[in-house]
Image (cartoon, rainbow, N blue to C red; front, side):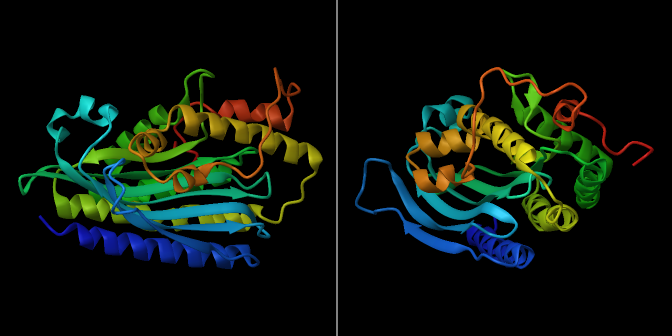
Length: 310
């Protein structure tokens, strides 16, 4: 099986390319890097390795944008991981990945998330498990059909060499089913792609992971250009802050990556960089009927965005 360092090199390059593109799109702020390394003498977490967490704050377009690369390994997995995969019990493991969440300043420009990752576990020098995972999703506050369709067209097109419409349909559905706030019976946004445990053919699966990572900018930057300069007022800003609360709810209650990172003793600051810099909660909030704010609810359920009219 190819060396995991091949995947690592792709991921560090991806982080560099996305940072450069987002800095150009923002035109004002730059990412600040926080390079970190686990203490090799700390046996309490059974973790080794490190990463590069990069944060852009207070930009003209992005209130906060975080993108992290990590390369961590260990000899013990949390019970939540080994319960579903008993072959991992007692195995040493290594995981490499890039994860990002961008929180724009303008309420008309959606929040977005993307992640691509590779995991490998070994016992007695033999690989007992490996897989790729990742995806990207979009969380608008004031949705535009044009943007959502562009997002899903890009997702569909990058799937074409890897199973075409069947791959897109399966991983779109997985995204719709994963990013759900079950206690509110609504999706986190308008979806995209999500996949995990992809372990058929290494070269093909790695190629797909790269297509997803590379496709993110093609999906998001045109939306940035269309929406970043739209005028907005305090009403839109307050609604944005309120809806950011849903993002916090999902990440802290349901997101498997967040839970795995915290349960395995991961680096807390890097894990929680996905949270928005400002957010508000309001008890019993109900948007005014037929308002732009009420319109969002129609988008928070799975839908075929690429029908005949698309």
